[in-house]
Length: 73
Image (spheres, one colour):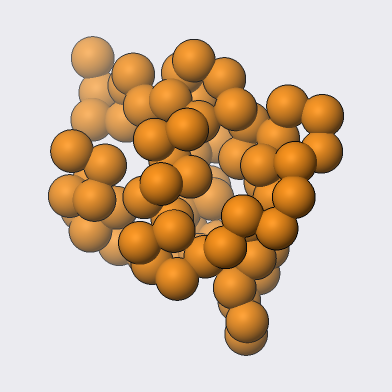
């Protein structure tokens, strides 16, 4: 399994909040996160977020993957 396997949407949202993002609202089963001066993020609130999608959102947020993983664990 990869480093990004088994990360839930709920855990991903918690980690992004530690980087200054706020849960703006929920649209369907996606949490919309916003941070002033940064791109908004859409995180699916699934039991497990697809690793490629999570990596794309981390890149969009300009966060290092290692820093993100440290916040999730």
